Amino acid sequence: MAKDDMVDADLPSRDAAKEFYAKYEPKEALGRGISSIVRRCIEKETGEEFAVKIIDISGEKSDIYEADLTKKDTIREINILRMCKGHDNIIELHDSFETPTFIFLVFELCKQGELFDYLTQVVTLSEKRTRIIMKQLIEAVEFIHSKNIVHRDLKPENILLDDNLNVKVSDFGFATVLSPDEELTELCGTPGYLAPEVLAVSMYDNVPGYRMEVDMWACGVIMYTLLCGAPPFWHRKQMQMLRMIMQANYAFGSPEWDDVSQTAKDLISNLLIVNPKERLSAKQALASPFFKRELKPTKQFFAKRTFKASVICVRFFHRLKFFYYNPPPIPVETIKLNPYGVKNFRKLIDGCTFKMYGHWVKKGDNQNRAALFEHVQREDWRNQISFDNS
Ligand code: ADP
Ligand code: MG
Image 1 (spheres, rainbow, N blue to C red):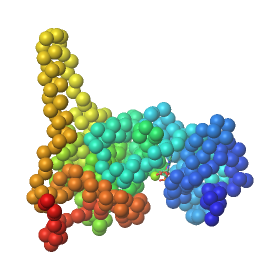
Image 2: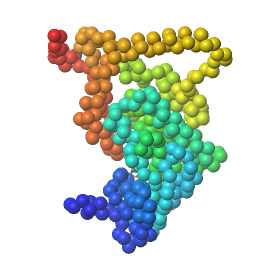
Image 3: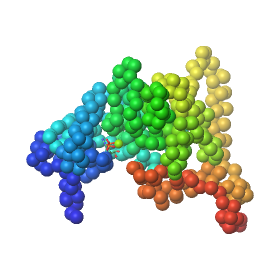
């Protein structure tokens, strides 16, 4: 197929969307959903790039009832996007068009794509990068919640990154506005990120519905995944996975979590709490020590003392640098016993695994990045590995 045909495949005809084509030139696909496709597009007048989400409401690919539902949901999505306008970490809706067969939502373009793909590339994030991303994400959630909106589908696929890797929360397809005492009962979201109260209300009678706290649970799942590369709740059998979620049955396993700070683990633990009333709110999470940098102001300035302290500091960092660049050798025995327990080896092993199988960590099917971490140390294999000690 010629390149231009590929660009045009799946596009609404020019007649069906004259208004859109008059202003924009559609380009290649960036992502696909059940009844939508997202493409890069160019605004003709300014030459600026955007992303357009084209939603099919014709009923050709689904039945009329479903198409009508999609249309209603999209109108709700547009209203919510407008309510959320103006926050740096929420995707901006630039323009929208409606025809009898398609709805076009024109968004700012996030060139770095999904946090999901970024994580697959790098396997895990440093605490520093996680702090930046989580702060921006939770700030966006705080803003959304202040408008009584609950997102309900926070996950790395719906967190986009701009040129400077800044977070842009997107996909408000499941978002809804809550009235003061309203409790939701609908089962929606993505399995690994669902909060226990969402599962409970869909499984049992006489249990309360859920509210905004579900987004904070998802933030806990995301933060855990960013820091260790694998999600906290995953099992090949979905029922088992749901059971793990209902009991908040997860662990900070060794060696992956050995080098992660206690403040990071505490924040995750305070988000992954089964009782939504005890779970941290966005505001409380932002005040957690993980986001704090303690800079204590000095009361008085003593020139001599400050000079001495500076000299000690410089010497200390000089030594530290020496050890950093010349780390003590790791005994071969330690490596032989458990190479995965040694941080640098672990990074190498995980990096190679994701290079080979990263493409397979896809969305929408039963594969999950967690499967790439499902390794057990096998006695028979370990004994076969021979190391050259020379
Ligand atoms: P769906 O409801 O089908 O999940 P999304 O709004 O999440 O639709 O978009 C689907 C995918 O399209 C995203 O996961 C992302 O890969 C891509 N995408 C969406 N919006 C943008 C954007 N503004 N910039 C770049 N890519 C985007
Ligand atoms: Mg999505």
